[in-house]
View 1: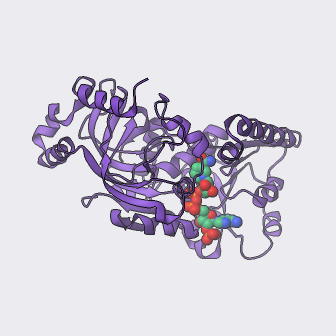
View 2 (view 1 turned 30 degrees about the vertical axis):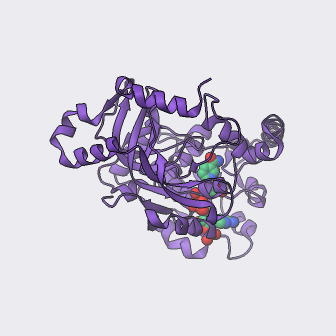
View 3 (view 1 turned 90 degrees about the vertical axis):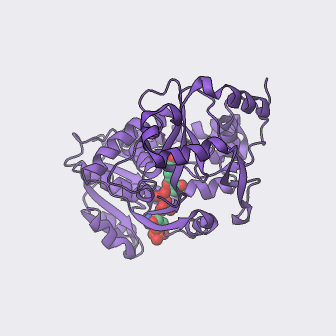
Length: 403
Ligand SMILES: NC(=O)C1=CN([C@@H]2O[C@H](COP(=O)(O)OP(=O)(O)OC[C@H]3O[C@@H](n4cnc5c(N)ncnc54)[C@H](OP(=O)(O)O)[C@@H]3O)[C@@H](O)[C@H]2O)C=CC1
């Protein structure tokens, strides 16, 4: 097999024959702003990026101005100039080593690098930016398009000047949002979509009248989930701390439960049972919440907090997968016998789903909820903020001055 350096060299040498660049594009010729970006893109073989060279605390984050410029390896890929990004809990967890067993394996799909050689690793999943270059099989996008996306965690991330994404992971950015606003939504809204739509089968036709409980409602995923559910007419009960009550009401929640105000079980008992519960917290909360679903009526419990990657990290892929299968299988069977569908959900990168979210944003049904915006040079501070918890929406990174 080819070494990584050889593969990069081939990609650079043959790039002209497998990609469409800005320079061939009519829009490019007529737009000085884009021409400027493209020129810098073409001239540089390196770019600034926040990388880690080993797992650990915030001290492992390093701004490297000489990070290798990304190249298109497959004809369905695009290179995006990152205008804004954001931080999610997975970034903090990955910095600490979370997912290293499974994600390293897939981050190098051609298996060119040996295991454990994933560094320097770029974190950051969200991007709002401009397409610079397209592989030849990319049909729906062209250089110069303003796009947003969430990049899967097994790929290099978006805390960099440029990032590579697949054409099927990106979507045209909602025109009504700035880059910093747009970068706050893809990862969390696609996670909410994966949980509510893909796992629980909710959609705009069957949501009206459904009672949904969102636990951990004040964070990134929760704020996106509430808005998606309200856009489709569900009755939403949000579980959060007291200081997030007004945020929840502003987002449209019908009922709010303050989990710090006292006995959560007693508070939930005073409500009617739910058709769907979205759990963003896990642990003891899962056990407690499962009692509050309508049994034998198709009700679903879906959690985002699963031991899937932890098991692989701890036990290795084979044993980890087996442990995960046993845990999930036994929980599914246990709750099915009580008339409840029990599910785990995972973020799924999807341009088509982002297209639908874009429509909801442009219709004014979903809006960004931004906790704080940090500059690119302050990425470590943004990680620190994320790590401190108590998020109220999203922590966003302004990568380019013009975002
Ligand atoms: N499976 C997957 O693919 C994915 C999983 N996740 C996971 O989902 C979870 C939520 O993600 P995200 O929304 O981005 O995280 P955030 O950190 O943005 O939000 C978490 C929120 O939960 C609140 N919270 C903490 N404890 C409780 C509690 N006991 N009851 C109710 N609310 C609580 C926090 O505020 P406060 O403490 O002030 O109450 C905070 O607002 C994370 O654990 C994340 O790792 C996220 C994305 C994808």
